[in-house]
Length: 451
Image (cartoon, rainbow, N blue to C red; front, side):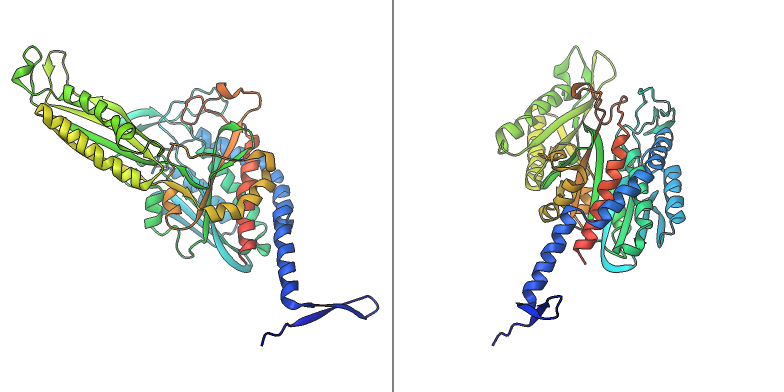
């Protein structure tokens, strides 16, 4: 027979005035505690105060990294700056050279609890900067055997500076942290140099998520949306990304007598048109997908039909099943079109970033944190985008949540703001403090809720 364990609530005179079952009071206390976290936990106020105090340092780190950008798998200076900073904060562990240049730091709180991970990407792009900023990059480097300008045209300089700021804040609060925070500074998010591996996939292989293994991971990306707005999705947030290569082989001949050979250029043109019908005629059009050819190479002279033509492009989808279906149908269409002209088509794929999927339950759990940090009106749910993000490899291992942070100056009209990857890309540095508050609050709220 079930018996309720009861306790008395005592008046100031010492007389009991009522009696409640213990399980009811425990439930009430839990509800009150969760509501307090959602509204304004003590650590929320502490994070806000500390973020204000270190804002100048975060801006200086960002400008220093911006002025000294490094390409993927070559982030040696950036990695050294990060590792030295984490060591100065007396981190429990600082592991370097993960996936070539990555840094993984572990901060153990003084109270028992779960483990959470935060990630920032470090690499710059082969872009020559045109912003005119006083700390603009003048760096040049070799990328795929070509000399290029190098620029943080995607905001990774801000991501690193933000996470360095979060590290400083949480290190100063470790006596009140219930659990541990793993800081993952990742190289080569934009893709490693040709012929190399790297990025989040290699970090996973080399144990970035192990010893200890986090229960969740959070990431943030800055961009030219409205200043200090936070954008999230439930489920797919970024597309998968595959590099498509089709080599069409014919038979070289004189341009004046094409019947003496097999023209791979005509076959390649037909293949380009043919694969564009895959999404419109062979896939449910309610499924988002893109097949784009961005590069065509073939021939050296106006009057010679060449032996080979190479097509290079990208495939983007939000559904793994659609991704596999498109690959199979590209193979079928390309090879059969080529065969109909007498040519041969060989299809291959590279890169292969999976769909970046925010765990719906984790999003529901942490949405109150975003609303508290930015304000309800500044938190917006979005549809999936066709860009890719190799944060997806971490999310394949553990539940993850990725957030976009708006950093467009209020003085810049939306249609005038340069997008990520532009040589004119700039951010309003007022967003850096919001980024610090967001990641620090996500980590602490997750840990306190998981006690």
